Image (cartoon, rainbow, N blue to C red; front, top):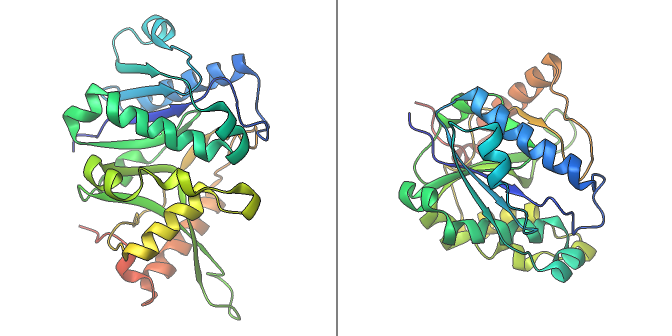
Length: 252
């Protein structure tokens, strides 16, 4: 299956002062590391590296990945609003910019979004779920608790696959409703949009294995075998729950 272009959302300068990782050189290095990891997953991938702090990766990409199909975009985020509402606001602006300026995304009509500094180790398996509309990772709580009801809590916005039409219709303005002071993150906004619009058949039926460094936390995610098995079991249990089964894409 041909992969949609991978949109890597970057901000070499961390306008969100609440993030743990703020060193620009390290953020640059880690963004390039994620590009390298994606190309290890599949050297034929097309990537769009879009930076919201006016950092142009063009020369570095040409130096490190001369044979890869990588489109580099950059612009300036609204610094004051990112400082006020957090990195989720900046990410929303970056995705919007890429949608309106990326030639690769326009030609494909869809894209895979992943936060820069991250990659998805089992991307090929995740891509096998692609329904040409929307795929996200849902986060559920209390799955293993015998005394509490399972709760659909939020959407993991680090990684998703979407058509341009679906993203434009539902999520392009999601970041405008963020209010970190009221506890309303981008993940919460995506969840609200799912609920309000009764979106179904749009959650991954496989558990994405997301690796790399989280800019907010400043260290590498760990995915030991025990955790991967637990996540797979969690997903199986939720998919079997009649309250949530229609949210998941059908396995083929």
